[in-house]
Image (cartoon, rainbow, N blue to C red; front, top):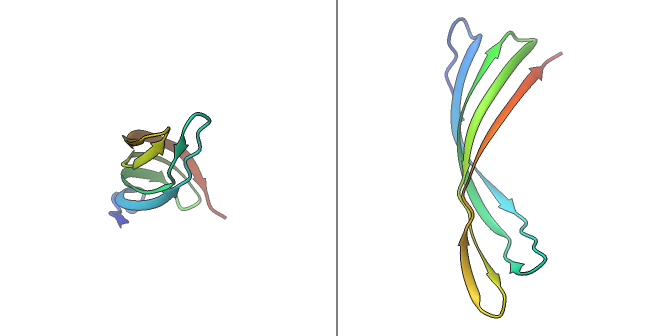
Length: 88
């Protein structure tokens, strides 16, 4: 994760990339569990005790399912996270 403190460390833009293992369950088809990646950008602003954050991430994932034939599916998604961080 790249973290760049600004304004006396009260504003912290950050970005990075992560990977995850996704359990894919479906009622109609047999989806395959897969590994996917997610690049993200965000900003955190506040004090050491309390701050607010917002982040945007994009999920890139390819999986397949079997309904008698093999089919590949791209599951790409854009997500937004908003939150508050409290430290003690």
